Image 1 (cartoon, one colour):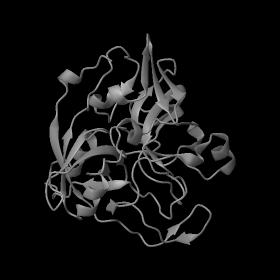
Image 2 (cartoon, rainbow, N blue to C red):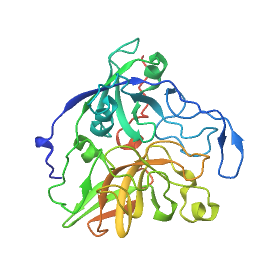
Image 3 (cartoon, one colour):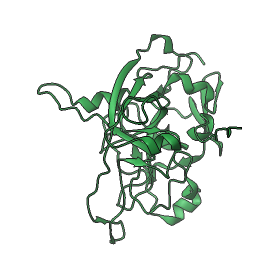
Length: 298
């Protein structure tokens, strides 16, 4: 695949492992007051490849959640903005401080509202990490273009993982393997944002009939999904015949308008230029081998 990767800039960005955030009671879409784990921290038992639904949690983030906590300087953009705009799915992450110093991980998504970048590490590293440890990322991918597919906008994606993704090229079109196709009618929180180079877009799963019709009950964290009739080039809008493809980054939610979040990777106003095919293995844990067990020592 021809890209402009040789013209992209690689920059260092850094974040700290965050403390989990709690808001006390959350009122569910059907009126129940619930106290549940939510965003932030180190999630020991939930990683990409695991189910996105069914947990006693709300917006829970897999793996490690990081944010740049440096004090903002007056007159300058928030320090966390660069981390959120420049970090891309597939970027290399390294632990810079603490007992897990030197361990390697992979960026798997971005979560808007809380403005976290999400990083996957193996179980041994998760056990060694602590709140406040610094994670460095070699941010690479912002500005990426597919030279033979000018009608397809790509964002939030490290070009070095493109060869490992379920993608096929044909003259005039790009076909991406996805686990599910989601109708625009189900999309909630994130609609109307003026940029998709950060954050995510939630799939509402409160209508059981529609969830069953589109087979969405088995969504997994890290799944690639197609969102139909939406364009994300300059923010998230409904556009008949458009298509956007992204990655599921956090779990389902109990609050109205929310659900598993999707960070955008590809978008086009023309579904002939950007197509999808259903592939049950279209998950970042699979095509990057993130859940592969290490061989035991003799």
